[in-house]
Image 1 (cartoon, rainbow, N blue to C red):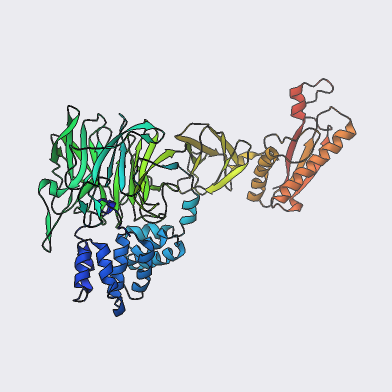
Image 2 (tube, one colour; image 1 turned 90 degrees about the horizontal axis):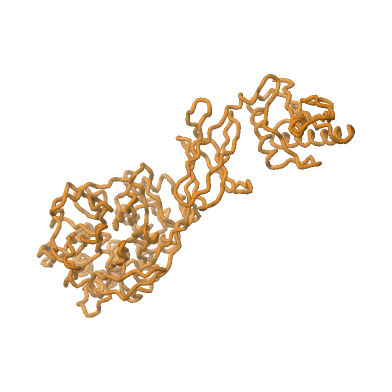
Length: 625
């Protein structure tokens, strides 16, 4: 069974962290512990397995952690279950929860997360979880943002990840497919190399070629390239610069970021960035569209967790500003890695410390605003590891890696066109925000799709289809329910200001004044449009519990007196019955038809169409207030 592939080097960067598990080492576990601390998890697991007859909780934990690092969730769960029968560090319960999620055992995962949260209540991962512990059903049902497609450029046997498409259609990615290369001892795969192909559209590529000017005998890649195509930042091992740490007599490489420039169509002038340091690793660079900011992952001093996302100003001439941690909006006490910054300042990144499906999930945060990071949802994210998401706006396509088929492979992500409808509920008179209002989104046939409650800022956001008409309906006690159009748009945002009139404005003298109540010709059944208006009357009557209403129905003068009287009586009763059905006591409303006996415009037999329409009306007379 293969370990967790080479992405582990680039996600965790935690080469020196294994020592934290050494607290219960003894002579029996010495051999296994050395293998574990050298990250040789396959052999370490074999050695720990020989000691399971001793029923030592430390052995159980180390076995579980070995399988966790290999992303062998089934075996990890088996040994975590035994390990947690004895008290463990909080991080063990977190790892256990991650493995349970990877197997779709979400209720059991939540139980372990609760234990973790109680032990580490100030941990950002615990805080995020406790805000919404039953998040998964919502995550599963959230609007689908992308379709995914397996890329045949991947090698099903070997690792591929870290793909990035540039505007010149060059496609760089990292792979262990070079079988001529020597194998890396920790996972029996060749060392990582950087490859390039040409994107031909529709998920098709030219045959990939190694980037020989960059590749060395160490791990090389992933890479990011400036918009002009002339500067590359890439990750490699510190061995490339002759730097390493000594660990029990071994030379342990760190990850460094290097820069190269293109000369006569070839990459050259390779130099290490000054932000590298033998005390920590830095990797997975992503350069902004203007070439002025570099995002990267690191376990450097100041990190919140095992690895964080950082950024640094690029000043030119291999001069850089002071690295800045992106803080808790992005980072947790877990692992965040693989940043990718878009031209409109949206940051994609991978995390195992947030509310996800399991393993590493891909998230996005708009750095222009103050919103939260969102999970990209299914099918980009699964219970397995999903990571290294990048996006090319000119081709309108993204790429990411996943081990959902067992090996880290490349996938294409095609955006599903969507629109964000952002609604703010306000008082029409004062302009003040109205919190906690009910906001429904209606389709083009006025069917209610979903209803949500506005937040403390009076806001509700809906993700809807492109090029489609929608209506927003807002309501709250004390205000007149109203509809607001959401304009048809192809992507982006639609801002809707739902300005509601206070119900008191509907009371004019001895009347509750509504818009016209329309009935179908020669019929008295309540239509959706009539119900919408009558709901305003219901709201007024609920606000004034002593109010008594007479619902009057009037017709125009066309037709016989007897026919008009009968029709108006039927319509008045329909109105009364509808209002009663909405929770108003029968004693508080009566319905009476007046036919053509009380015209609003006395025009006799010479009425215009406009005058007939004024006479065909419903009036709501306040009998008692």
